[in-house]
Image (cartoon, helix red, strand yellow):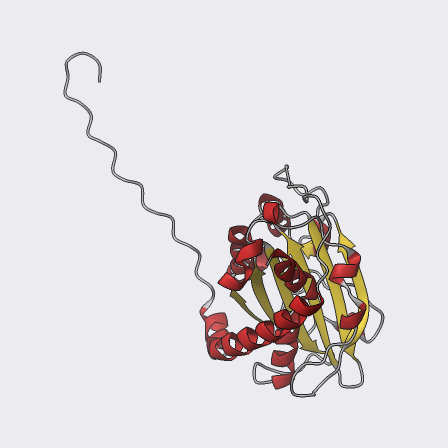
Length: 273
């Protein structure tokens, strides 16, 4: 109001935005596995990191470039497969030395992402021994996902690399897809893995294409786990090739845990100590 009129009352405070709630169905399915994953992952990562500390030689010099655009250069498909069950976990103090990409080494190399020593996985339980069937290291992260919203979110997170591997034991009938995103910080990695669970209708990772019977990956029941590991986001996705199974399948659970033991990420942590 102009002149000597009464001052306008202050605008009421704006309400804080609420984070989207994950569907109740998913919460019920993943809740009973929380303790299993927590204990098993902590033990598995501790053992794997100890082994890497003995053998690590360090990463490349230099710094990885940061994403500068808020629009993915490659527009992914609008739809695609996603697992029936998904859970996630934020980064922990173990990965504090690589919480910021600026403090890490250069970009991941193919040798780091797909070392010869990790061509065959040996998860606990002995239900399957998946071998590497496909691998790819992309500098454009949107190539590794479907869903424009997810692709743009990865750009906002400063994603500069996406490493994908596909493992399978066709005799036992199990397969595992593992995707590693190189992001700007642990905070961004936390946000990305949580966001995958909050709205999978907006996109998910794309397993590498493969010939039969691996071309059936993504159909039927599957379980996935997103882990923030410093400034890296690791998404493991396991399923039976016949599409059957449920959350009580111990082999699927073991494969997810094995997929979280990423040698490239553990090597970077060891090199930072």
